[in-house]
Amino acid sequence: MRSVIIGGGVGGCAMAAALRGTSLGTKSVIVERRATGLAEGMGFILMPNGVDALELLAPEIHWRSAGRTIDRVSLRTAHGRVLTEQEIEPAICVAREKFLGLLRQTTGATRFLEGRTLSTIVQREDGSTEAIELDNGGSINGEAFFGCDGARSRTRALLFPEAKLAEVVVKEIVSIAHAPALARRLGRAFHKYHDEEGGLAVGLLAESDERIVWFMQFDARRWSMNDTSPLALARFVRERITGWSPEIFEAFDRTDFAASHLWPTSDLPPMATTVCQNLALVGDAAHACLPFTSQGANGALADAAMLKVLLSEVHDQEGLRAAFQNYSQLRRPHHRRMFMEGRRLREAFLAPLRNDGPVIPLVA
Ligand SMILES: Cc1cc2nc3c(=O)[nH]c(=O)nc-3n(C[C@H](O)[C@H](O)[C@H](O)COP(=O)(O)OP(=O)(O)OC[C@H]3O[C@@H](n4cnc5c(N)ncnc54)[C@H](O)[C@@H]3O)c2cc1C
Image (cartoon, rainbow, N blue to C red):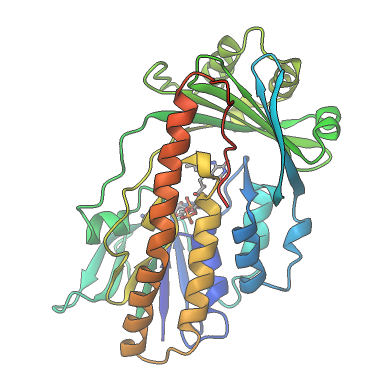
C-alpha cells in the first residue's frame, strides 16, 4: 500500500519511521513545503513520553545522548531570587536542526519530495482520499494519507473546516546563544525567570557544552510585537529585561537575532475525530498545544509511536480504517489533557506571581 505523508517536520519524519517494516511503508513519500527540509535554530525539550516514543520508533539511535539531560527546574524572580527548585524526571534538550537530522536518518526507504506544497485533496464519492494535488499542478495517488503539516495544517482546513486555532494570547521569541561559560553553569538545570506582574518570562537551558536555548514568553495583548526583523527582536527583548538577572544578558549578548523566531502560540480545541477514513492527522495538525506544556514535538512523536503499533498488522483498506479510528479514540484523552493543561499553565503565567510561586512549565 502506498502512503503519502504531507509535511516533513517532526510528525512527518516520525511517521515515516513508524511505517518501516509495515505494508504501508514500502512505497511511501513525504511532501515537504520547505526546499531544504531541515528547520534552523531553536530547540526542543524531549520529555519522557517523547523519548519512549523515539525508542520504539527508532531504537537504532541513542536518543538520550542526542542533547543535554535536564533534571532540575529552578523558577526565579526576574532578578534571580530562587522561588522554587525541583528535581524532574530526566528530559533532553536538543537543538532542532540536530534532532530533525537524526529523525530523517530513520525514514528508511521513504522518498522526500521537497519544495512542494499540498494545494488540495481529491476525494472519492464515499469521502475517502484518492490523491493530493500539489502547487506545481502534479498529483500523488495513495492508499493511506497522513496530514503532518503542522499547526496551520492545510490538510485539516480542507477536511475539517470547522476546526480552528484559538486566538493568540501569548507570543514567544525562541533562539540559541553560543555561550559555553553559561552552558557550564546551567549544567542540567532549566532556569526560568518571571516578571512579578505576570505575563513575561525568560527560560534558559543548555543543549550542549557550547550552546543555550532560550525563550521569552510575553502577553501579546500588552505587547503586540509584529516586527520580526533581527533588529526589532533584539530591541524588544532588551527593553523588556532592564534590571533582570545577568544570566539573561549573557545569553542575549551571545545571540544571533537573525536566527531567532517569533512564535505566535495558539492551541486547537480538541477535535471530535482526527481521522477521515483513510487519512489521519498527526502532530500539531491534530492537536496544536500551547508551549507551556512542552508537548508539541513530544505529542507528535507519541502519535507516530501509537500508529506504528496499530498499523503493524494492517494489510487492506478495511484494516486501515479500523486502525485509524482506534488511533483517533485512543489519543483523544491525551489531546484533551494537553489542551486543558496548556490553558491552566497560561492562566498561571499571565497572573502576578503569588506567594506559592509560579508553576513548573512542563507536562509529562
Ligand atoms: C516558530 C516556532 C517555534 C517553535 N519552537 C518550539 C520550541 O522551542 N520547543 C518546542 O517543543 N516546540 C516548538 N514549536 C512547536 C513544535 O515545532 C511543534 O509542536 C512540533 O514540531 C510538531 O511537529 P509537527 O510535525 O506536527 O509540525 P512541524 O514540525 O511544524 O512540521 C510541519 C511540516 O509541514 C510542512 N508543511 C506545512 N504546510 C505544508 C503544505 N501545505 N504542504 C507540504 N508541507 C507543508 C512544514 O514546512 C513543516 O516542515 C515551535 C513552533 C514554531 C512554529
